[in-house]
Image (cartoon, rainbow, N blue to C red; front, side):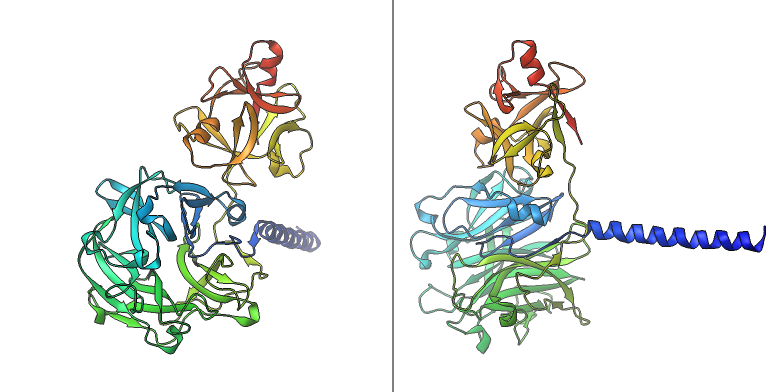
Length: 488
């Protein structure tokens, strides 16, 4: 081979490598999704996790029902419907419904989700922590009420949080030594006998002792456990939430017995607080979650946009990644401005979705438009015509499906007076039935699909003058109108 030929091949190889690098970089850039806070325009005391392909988010509702948002992406979570998951609120616990959290624990009935929330009868002095248990292993429930967690002890308490240490479950909360009046809320811990009952004595592990814990009124509340590399930390909210100086403090379990007050060490300085330059005030009452691929740690918290805003509906839900200091303690950094563009948690990806192509108008696809459902050609935006075919909400057995909107997670195709609409799941049995269909062989072509109504089995999903509805099918035109191809 001549030197000239070898040089030409070398140059060609270099060009191919460079081209490949550019393509790879371009692809990586195209896949880099971003977002801005907040996740909820109004959402205080947030709790969030990533589980089995979806994010789940709850926040204070003030009254029942308790609601939960679910979506596979952060962008989807911002648009997701808040679905009622628990609505059992008699007169003795129907006021000040605060700080819901859900924890996956191995209880007497096997692994279940346990929903902890604060509520009382009339005034703040009535606040207690209550527990509900999921029927199955779906974070969305349904949930059944199990009781007031303190039982006969009847301690005052808010902001329940669960941590497992050396195989034992413990409840953390904000409590007082006696009655509410005249006592400073402090952080307590007690062992759980079951997920809905305590056993043994409680221990105070933090009280508002530093100046930065006493702005407005002395306060320690909203504990949240964080475990990393075999160490257990607890963040808590300090000072009065009515002030812009509401902030986070940090405890670490440095001894062996969580019920020994001396086993806990408090950081003398706050670890997360107001950032006036970024327009962030009162950042506190937080939780933690990991990224979909498990490589990143994230904090979820609420904050205000102005120093004059207080302890109500102005607070919104925000998230950001955090890291770790060389000594192994968490480094939360500073709360960022809502204008800051952040990369989504690592490992996040869009789930599989499909389109429904009309059999007799094959240039048209099922889509939602202003919450009506129709078939159209050249759908814009394209995501209006994309749906996740998920197990049926009323029956997840073989063949039953529900259609969840890709760009409005938590919204499903359902029939209402036989007309099809896109609506948020309200958690009722009727909604689940209206939004469930049996997928069968296409009525006009067995290689396509038709969708039989779950609660009106003589009716099928079909288009009529381009609008979708459920109807009995009795002729060739109806069979063609009721036949669709599930396609990418």
